[in-house]
Amino acid sequence: MKPASDQTLLREAAAWIVRLREHDAGERDNKAFIDWLKQSPVHVQHYLELVALEVDLAEPDLHRHTLEELRSEASANVIAWSGPGIPIVEAQAAGAIAAPLPRRQRRWFAVAAVVSVLTLAALLGITLFPREQHYQSAVGELRSITLEDGSVVTLNTQTELRVRYTAGARLLELDRGEALFGVAKDAARPFQVRVDDRVIEALGTQFNVHRRVDGVVLTVVEGRVSVMSRADAAAGLAQRTIDPAVSSGARATQGVPTMVEVGAGEQFRLGDLSAGADVATTASRVARLDESEVARLVSWTQRRLAFNAAPVAEVVAELNRYNHDQLRVDDPDLALRQVTGTFNANDLDAFVGFLQQEGGVVVRTDAQGNRRLQAADVQRH
Amino acid sequence: MQRNDNRKPAHPGLVEDWVRQWHRQLRRFLDQRLASEADAQDLAQEVYLRLLRFESADLVRNPQAYLCKMASHVVSEWKQEARQRMPHSSQGLDVLPIEDDMDDTLDLQRRRESLGRALEQLPPNMRAALMLHHLDGLSYQQIADELGVTLRMVRRYIEDGYVRLRQRMGTTRRGTRP
Image (cartoon, rainbow over all chains, first blue to last red; front, side):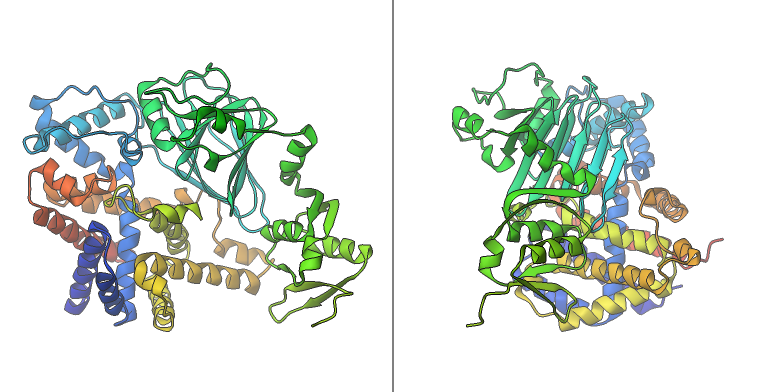
C-alpha cells in the first residue's frame, strides 16, 4: 500500500501530463512543471513512470478488450466503412483524413465504425496495428537484419530504424543514421521508408539512405524507387493510385502526388522534393553517379570507408561516426588537405598512421583521451 | 536537424516522437535491470540531481524532452559502467541487456498482461478515451466529440486512468504478485 502523500504525487504527476499533452505548453506552464519536479526525486519518479505507462498504452493488443466491447455495444448501429485500408494512425498522421463529418451525433457510433473495422480486421487475421519493431545500432556497430518478407536491411553506425509490416504495406522509419535496404519483391505490399516528411517507395531494389546533418541523401544501387511527401504517400496507399510502372522523372499534375523517381546509379537529396517546385527542376536534381562512386558510398557495409580526394575534415568526421574515441583536426590547413584511400572504419590508428606517413602531422592526446591532429609546420600565432 | 523544424506535432494528442525515442532505451533498461523499485528510485534520484544542476532555456522550452533525455543518458551511462566493470566475464553477459528481441522478454510480457488486466477494470468510457488517445492519436477535443462528453470529462478520464493504472501496475512491480 502506498502512503497517502505518494498518492497525491501520483495524481499531480498525472495532471501535469494531461496538461502538458493537451496543447503546446507555454513557458509559464513549463516553468511551473519544472518547479514541481524539482521538489523531490519522488516527483521525478512518478513522472518518469507515467511516461513509461504512456508508451505502453500505445500497444494495440492492450485495447482488444475495449474494441470488442465497443463493437458489441454498437452492433445494431454498424456504419458501413468505406475508408482506406490503411492504418488509421498513419492516415491521420499524414493529414490524409480531410474535413471531419459533423461529429456531435456520431458519438459512440463513430467509435463503433472504427472499431468494427478493427475487429473485422482482427477476425480476418489482418493486423492493422501490428507491433512495431525497433532496431538500433551502437557506435561502430554494423548490423544486418532480415525482415519477415526476406528483405535485408543493413544498419550503419548509430542508426535507428522502426519497422512495421501491415497487410497492405511494409513501413519503415529511419530515425537516425544510415541504412542500406535490400528489398524483396512483393507487388502487393509497397516497401516504404519514411524519413522525416519524405517517403521513399520501392518494390524490389537496393538503396542506401543516409540522414546527414545537411540533409537526407538517397542513393539507389539497383532498381528504381519513388520519393514523395508523406501525405502523398498515405493518400497513395489509400487510393492505390500509385502505379509502379510510371515513367521516369518527376510529375506534379493536378491531383497527382508530387514525386520523383530515382533509378540505379542515381542520387537524390530528399530535401529537393517540394510540392511547389517545378517538375523539371526537381527531376534535374537527380544526380547520376559513376559506378565506382556508388560502390564507394556503400563501402561502409564492409566496414571500409573509401575516399577520393576528400578533405581530411570529412574523413575524420566520417571515422568519428564509428568510434567512441574521437579525432579532432585543430588547424584549417590540415582540415582541407585532400586524401585518397580506403580506411577501416574502426581503425583510427591506421588513419592517423597514414597521415603521419604522408608527413607533417603532429598528434597529441587531450584530457578527454581524444586525439588532436595538427599540421607540423604550422606555427602557433 | 530537420526534425526540429516541425516541433509542433501533427497530433498534439499522440505521444510525441521524442518520448518514444528516449523512452525505448529507458523502458528496456527498466525491464532488464530496474525490475526492482530500488533501481527505479536510483534512476529518479540521479535524474533529479541532474535536473537541479541543469539550467537552460531549452529545458524551459521543452522540459519533458529533457527529462526523458537525461533519464536515457543516465541509463546508458550505467550500462557502459556495467560493461567496463566486467568486460569479458560470462557472468557479466547474463546481466547485460541483450539488444536483440528485447520486446519478447518475460518482464515485458508480464507487464503487458498486468496492464491489460488493469485496463479491463476501468470504466468503459475511460478505457475508450485512453484507447482513442494512445492508439488512434486523437486529441482530447476529438475524443470529447467522439464520446459525446465534455472536454473536462476527457481530461478527467485520462488523468484518472493513469492514476488507477499506475496504482495497479505499481503493486505488480513491487513483487506482491508471485
